[in-house]
Image (cartoon, rainbow, N blue to C red; front, side, top):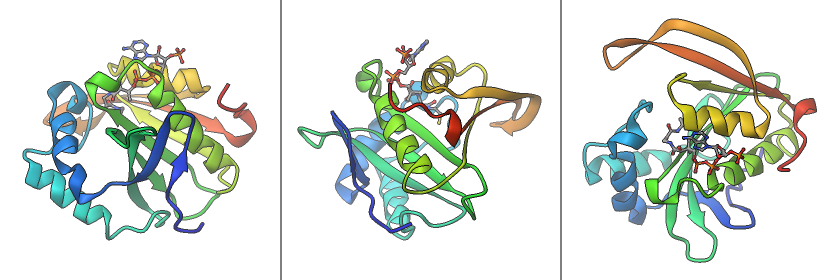
Length: 184
Ligand SMILES: CC(C)(COP(=O)(O)OP(=O)(O)OC[C@H]1O[C@@H](n2cnc3c(N)ncnc32)[C@H](O)[C@@H]1OP(=O)(O)O)[C@@H](O)C(=O)NCCC(=O)NCCS
């Protein structure tokens, strides 16, 4: 994998988060609805700045690390959200993605478009054979997104995950390279 990390789709550009994104990142990642099922919720713009600075130290494609890309409107460059990629140690292991959009950008098919671009890369140039998603069963939008892309449910772990002091369920979705039929 090279460290190239700009991907254009019909309407979006996925590229590195920049220091100037901190205020916009905080505005939606700090939103209760967006953060409800997320492990990371910034408490301030400074938290968002620190997160972006930390990402600067993780080259895209670093094994066993989450690399977070900005999801931008292609035409304007405005920050619509972010998409995390967890690169496993080898291409025999499963790659994982996580996407978050600012509330005003949701419901336009942007998450699907961004995820489809990443799946195309993962199963194409990057050579992965399996992609997984781990989601709280109450996160209906995320489950709809995964199903819309063709992910299958493989497991439902009951009260398996301690999240903010509460034991919650964890549902595993997966897709194999041979099951990926394209952005469709
Ligand atoms: C998950 C998330 C990125 C989805 O964004 P989105 O803008 O709704 O996604 P899209 O518009 O691309 O829609 C994808 C599919 O999900 C469906 N969908 C989206 N929200 C839905 C909801 N609340 N209920 C049912 N279906 C929904 C869409 O209709 C679409 O289906 P289709 O392709 O069959 O038409 C967004 O809800 C979000 O940012 N949530 C907060 C962060 C989060 O929890 N992320 C997931 C954890 S990693």
